[in-house]
Image (cartoon, rainbow, N blue to C red):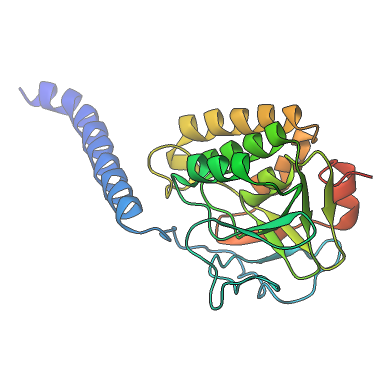
Length: 245
């Protein structure tokens, strides 16, 4: 009996460890579902504020989706919590706000009915699938995309920028990328959602290729945690064809 117990002891320890891991994982999943901004504590140095200037090699800044509204917008106050499409002038329209689930279908319908020929972007990003849906609607409509001098296009927003038949970023406009969340639970760190991450990255790579943008731009995002943002240089925007000549 004692010999049998000794043989079973390593198996019991292994099962106990597996159970403990499952309990921790369940807790993280639960926290991920109840907190939009949930993220595991970071042990690395904290990125500088978003508004601090960048230079090549020093391009990582804190990510804050609650940025102020764009210059020239009719909306005062903080960044809209959902995408808003509003007319500007000279055949342009402004697409601004955070990208939430359901925005893709709603904004795609607005784009199809719009008479604008150019979409100005100012968005901190958000839901990847909806950004791709908006982007495909822009490409189908044959519209151009642009960032003005003080506009930002972060997180999933660059995928909308990529959809323009012509793509311009004025001096002072900021384009940034970082790691994304995919799948039903959009809040999990990448290592807890490997299958969703791989599927989502494959979809994004195919999308960028369709739009004539080099999928290698994802390499910068993959090495930047969700609570930070990697701001691309002009040379990088041109290298990956995110802007057109």
